[in-house]
Length: 149
Length: 218
Image (spheres, rainbow over the protein chains, first blue to last red):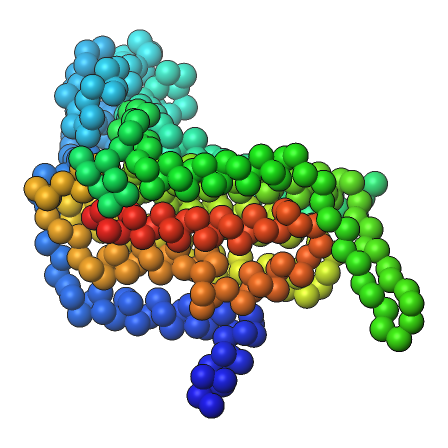
């Protein structure tokens, strides 16, 4: 009897979201009870923020124009790692030497600092992320144009 | 390394993301590949409605552009499933899983049936909400072990991933269309146009099979 009632409730897809929310809430409750998780000190992608650096939010360490020392999972797969962050246009480099505000404009400069992790060592993630966006745009544009000739 | 799915036969390196083919993931990959080829090659079905009490039936006619779009989405879904089957990175796996969820909505997005559209909307909501435990789980995996690579995670040197975090990953994948959150997907199958709609079912089945391997390996 009770199984019949449960299966009738589950079979209505209007109830899916509440069931999923309840499952998430139960699991989150268990997670909170099992806190604290022990975090490892030896992180793969460490990040230190140096507020004094002129490249502030984008500074990943290492002087420009030379290879920076970057922690990688498989260094042998990314021989050029460390050079992406090091690259600044001469104008950006001059700006960084004179002001403290290159960090706010640096992504607007051609050849400015690209994120080492996203564009070098974890490039496949970036590809898949943009694919998700493109697929979503394709669906949205198809539905939008459906009625028109 | 000898993971839950056997020792890898071949590696493909993309920087820190290393794709590996173990006997288990290779079998799942081939299944997704074969079905994607079938989707590309086959002609869609034409659904028949039999009229009761009379010797008559009607054929549901679907426009060419709708079929083309649905085939495109089914192929994209197949490619996403293939990627999820062989990827050797927890975060990458989560990305492919959410891509499969979006493609599943896309396969039935063009159907002119209110019922199917309602089911697809509810499924989309659950898939959207499912990304929270999915990516949250991946983030805690990175925090507790310091790595995201499944090859590194299978070694015993690293600290163990908490059980509840594995639960987060499994719940996130279940939100993409496994029982008991399957009702909306079953209603989506009412849309005409097999084999494209079957891709919805197969992709989530494959992803669930893969997440078992991922969780066992951690």
